[in-house]
Length: 163
Image (tube, rainbow, N blue to C red; front, top):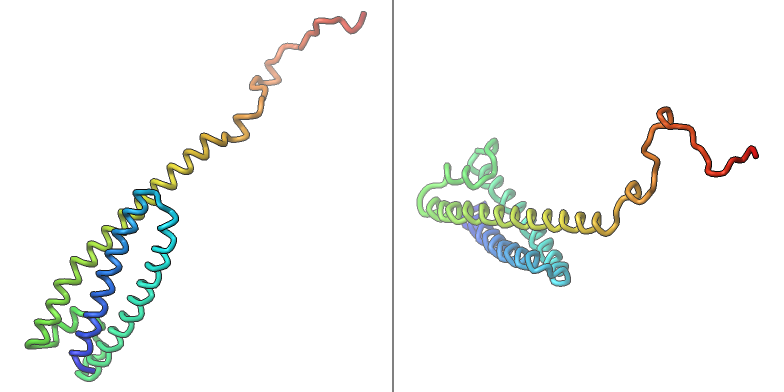
């Protein structure tokens, strides 16, 4: 396979990652605004982007593996870094540009998703706390005799039953 087809695949992959990042930021806004009705369709859309990214990534790996095989380098990992090592000239510069664009974008996506995860975790903790306040445990509702039976004095009745 040729390097231009790999570059075209990288371009598609980068575009999908940019769109996924926008969705991730939108998800943060919805999570902070507690808009669960708008969150559900966004999660469906996000899942579709993840599937598309996975498919394009598999295609990219296949193209890189084919190129490496054609260069008799089939033992190498099918990564962009590996390509940068072996490709020369203008194609190397294009690949380097993609590498330089991908690294910060992936870092931003990771940071945004960690923020979303933290917001979700805090929301779940708040919900759990609210439920615990509204529904106390059964232990707290039952009356129990906390005294030990061994140290207990014999109970005397107000009325003498032997009379």
